[in-house]
Length: 275
Length: 269
Image (cartoon, rainbow over all chains, first blue to last red; front, side, top):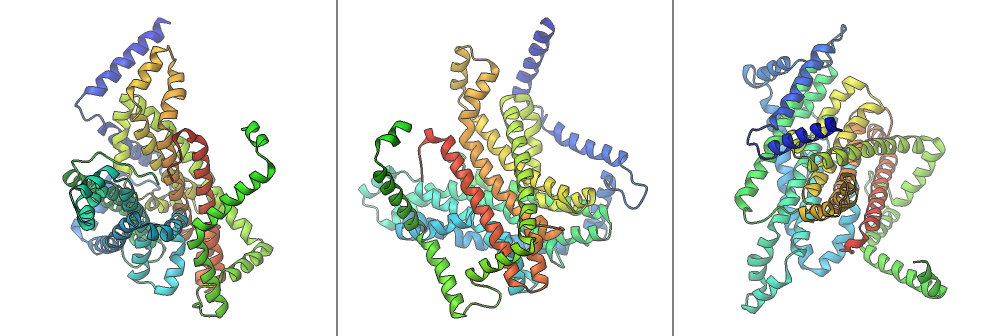
């Protein structure tokens, strides 16, 4: 009894300490993961062929070669970034206006809402083999599928944003004699920005997933291509180095969007859109 | 519920449901119009070679059934979704509740998740193929990871968002820790958990199909790729329509469950 109570007491004091400490104890888990990886690499050694888990320093050396010593990775990184950028920008340019329109016009909503909600749960990536047949092997099918996959979260974010605008704000705008354009520009659009942003943040990782998939399936360029090529030639260090590269890009985009949000939308709380 | 249906006459109920059906048909009319248009163009023979008409696809699905490849491949795909999604979301909910409720675990674990979250999990698939081979396990692991993250993040946010006041009042009534968990924390964060599940399910379908496109021996994605090699567009569209159908059915099932569980929240849509 007293033993249990003592442990309980000790744990709750530890918990209180963790709650208010300013030490970055979160890094413990990240370092822990790396340590587990390294231990795994040292324990799992195959006597035949390449190591199944390359050691950390081997992967780091590989990255050094790819990025600094030989610089072979840059054209692939550029190809991947180009695809994400073009497909995603197209989704922004189409998705935001259409979503805003859906929220503002009952007629557009009537036509598009059932179509979008049918397409939402369909994995659009399933159309990729078809696009490969129609559009060939170049950039085109990849850009189209990245566009399609990132379109719907952005569109839905904008749509829900307009729906969530408080009637009261619109009425008071009308009371001051604002025109419909002014109401849209000064009230509806700013109020839906946080939702639009949530949609964009949801679409970004999906765009990256789809980009990697298209490069893994068929490509002659890109980080996905590095990974699948190295896997085929049993060059496992390069597989891991490629995964690290794409992870860094993902983390970079995520952080960039988070910073952008802090800058632009500091006045708004975090909204999660219910998809 | 029972007495209510006993009170209303059979005729009234039929009319009620007819009304509901016609309302649903009206709401879905743009989709139905699109499908009819697709069929009409197909009947006129004006579709491009690589897009068969809906009736042709259905006929081909029948052929695939008799050949035995339809059920085998569909089941391979569905099995992966079930294993990966169930496992990943169960772990996501459990870990999310623990890290959301106990400060020290939250502080320790959450940074790891937010660093690994933006990594496209499908990029790890070639590594899993190296470790586990081309088969069930490598794909199941990647689906598991893909489902875990959204469910975990939504659960964590939901548990964090439970008002302290609710917990204090439960404590005031001498609720045990377990009771607080099952009767306050989980019901309060249920809406968040369920939207995490919906995102996770959609992602699971994307990842399953992608993994099968990349390297697989079975499954709908593998069928679609094979169809591309032989320019067999009926086969390709059959695979696409099966995965689309599964995606829609499972999403609607989840929405139905959500409506049942969250009846107290009211219907927003």
